Image (cartoon, rainbow, N blue to C red; front, side, top):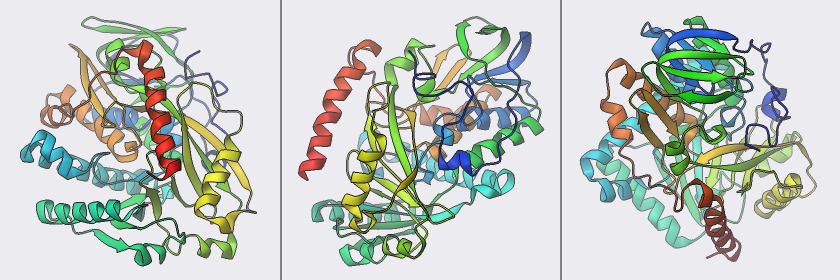
Length: 434
């Protein structure tokens, strides 16, 4: 069974704190009959909706097909952290790709944050753009490397929004004894992800986009035009954008060779009240240097939204709550008696290098996926650059598509067992503190 249905009820958002605190619109109609469009987009998350909005504003007729609901997937379930850059150190990207290419990629990542800030402010102010993401390291050597990277970003790009922190400085903000140091990036931010997705869908429709929910795509017939087939209808389109990320169930082998679905999980505690000040002294998001990363922040009602485990099978583990609670308490023993009111999971797409995979997978077919935990800003930006490429402005797509993203060894059939072995090793290293 594909990830579209393995862990969720058709057409229903998960029982998350996000869904409980979002004004959700009525479900949109499914696709029926034959329709013509300039662009058909598969997936109504940040990538697909941003592309649709840009294309509609440029005068294109756009139809978006979503198997469940707009924002149903990772776009409406994620940790809400708007990070800077990529899942590599920027200095490492420069060593790999050269200074000029690395600079263009940095500028793209900075533009992705600026775009998101503007879209939230205009279309989803209730998503509450809140500046500040801290990062914690567990070893003094890792702290030194992080501070060196901050100095590199300042010297090379003039990025002066990071405050390097020693153990005491970080503990003034993040009240755990686990970290050896870190930094605070005030150019990064956090948002309510589902409210943003809902606002973005509303904005796209206001611009003329047609969104059909409950419309799983079963087949795409290549050609000029291409034909996108659902159970009850089809769209004949001059261009197609594949924007399903981890929920794209094998529609395109080229995408599947580079992008693998994995599951991640988040819990929301009961409101912490005064206890919140014993966890975070500022309203910032936090991530850390474990390979299986811990990430957390406060909700507006002072719950701790805590994510910190992954799984590499399609099915969710039987006990999500227990493992999340254990990881949370290992950082914050003061939360041992705090209950989790909401626990949910979701599927994201990762790549071998943990860098986004932007590809042209046919003469008139485009794909953006594999954001590997950095998708809150970068996935929407991928939608923007694919829209620009369809319009004829390919510069930024060409930059992003040069990120090093090899195929998984053995192709889609072997990617899961090979990655599971690798991730088990890295998880063991995390537990041993190596």
